Amino acid sequence: MKEYHSKNPYNGTIINTYIEDTVSAIESKLEKALAVEASWADTEIEERCELLSEVAELLLDRKNEYAELMSKEMGKPISQGISEIEKCAWACDFYATNAEDLLADELIETDADESFISHDPLGCILAIMPWNYPFWQVIRFAAPTLTAGNTALLKHAQNVTGCSLALEKLFLDAGYPDGCFQSIQAGHDEIEKLIAKDGVKAVTLTGSEIAGKSIARTAGENLKKTVLELGGNNACIVWEDADLDKYIDTMVTARMQNTGQSCIAAKRFIVCEAIYDSFLEKFAEKVKSLKIGDPLKEDTFIGVMAREDLAETLQKQVDTSIELGANVLLGNEHNGAFFSPTILTNVTPDMPVFMEETFGPVAAIIKVKNREDAISMAADSRLGLGSMLFTEDIDAAMSIISNIPDGAFFINDMVKSDPRLPFGGTKASGYGRELSREGILEFVNKKTVYIKK
Image 1: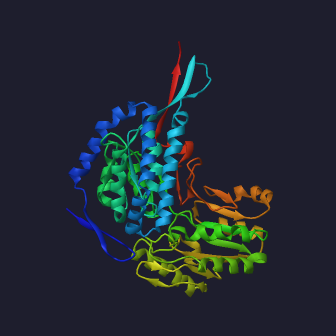
Image 2: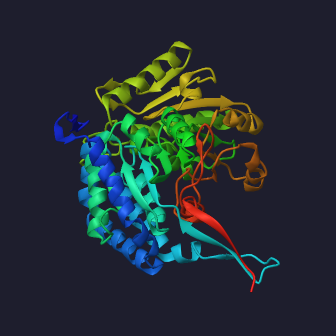
Image 3: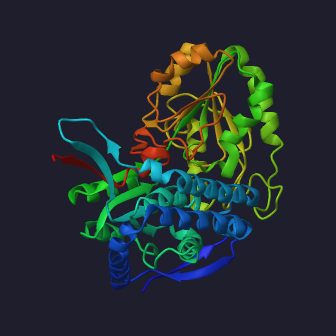
């Protein structure tokens, strides 16, 4: 049996010690999921929605407890952790209210007396989830997937095992059948073997491109459907007519919330030269004002990164970019898991902070001549999760939406997930969609029914 520790990245203390599940334990959990699969699929949709509403209530009741757990396990500022739990409750409420309509048979007029598409659950779905939003990433999968009649196995990131177990208990406490939602503690090899099991019908992963390719390869070899939400290198485009006084706070939050550890964070700030100096002054002033400190204090906005090795990786990306000519306007202080809010200017497309996903509080600033150059520069990425554009010229902004082939395009706001809207990327950012109607239909059998009387 393999032991591992959960470590507080802010002070280095050991929070807990866990033991990885054995092969037999994993098989037992899969068997338990399969044992409840048929009865859960036959449960009336109204009852499933009632249970999901109970999950929402429990989330709100326990939001301080869960936020503190996130702060200790991965360093999330506690006020942002509370907001994360509130968003989880919102997603549960959305599906509890709308799932019956979203899953309703879709009538199609044909030569038959009656024909329609039914939406049947697939069965047991394996979810492989990351540490950066340890409750939200799971709930946005689990709420629609369970409500569609599937069961779920969760393989969470090792450093948020406490959150993983808390989520399992959450669904049990809400009244879900034992085996409907289970947490697995296992390494990569065991998970790949689990994917190959006949009982696992599909896999969803939120994580790195490397992990996504590996899981997709194994799933493909076993003809299992996958949904992949991978990395992002989102552009924040600032045209010359942008209202900086109105939106500078949004732009800074888009980069720095969750200590910059978000796939949909603004990572490349592409700014028209006519507004560049003003943008840089206001942006730097706002970043300097962000409260840095203990994640457990309510006024902290920037805490620490989730692990020391993540901060070291970010430092290498910054150092290489500086060697290639980038200038440090602010920050670039690194100590353990702490990385200070950093602004780099004179960034060019050959630098890691432009080409790669920077998963931490580093803003890369790129000056361009005009709007056309800004859009061209924004589209210059092998990743395609989302882009944001700030301008007062809404008509012009809408006319170039298709010029950036990302999964999302936000005008005068930061890219964010919303239960009412589909979420996902293109290119190396993955495929498939979470949330909204598209999310709840990802793991169902869209069955054609044709009736002659």
